[in-house]
Image (cartoon, rainbow, N blue to C red; front, side, top):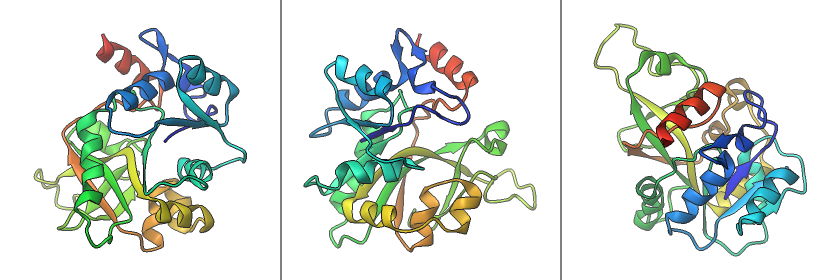
Length: 237
């Protein structure tokens, strides 16, 4: 499932921007399909333009029936009546989505024989100081079993002693959910931490859900700003 909201706050209409001759959302959709990991791939959107872009190319798209504040809510509505066990959420601004990373989050559920894990997601090590301090880059800290402890737009952990050995991880916008966790998310109200940080993953933590993080070395480029789009265009060439 690829949630695709047209009116992004930081970069309106970013999903319809041109990336090497095709809109960003179409590039992302095709990247997910080309992994050949999924029974079906859908774009879930509030936009007629995005819907028509996907369908015109022979893709699958679903129009949201309600207004939604986040991708999890949008996906929950779309899958409510579907007979599925695991749903993978690829953000619409991730045109460099790759098979290896997606296999990593899906393997979490293959290995989870006792069904203790509610979600799996990706993290990648970052070392660039500007990126570490950039509030558009969501950081994550984990315990010794790689379960998420917290997500933040601030640098976490805070290097009080200015230790050069401090390791930072960026949260990449790919999730795999058990359907039950997704259904819980859409019925539970937003709490203070999520409202403060504006990070939907925090809601799962605030309600006691277990998120297993999988480290990847694939950086990719999430398109949050016009500058990101320029980087993506350069990388595509």
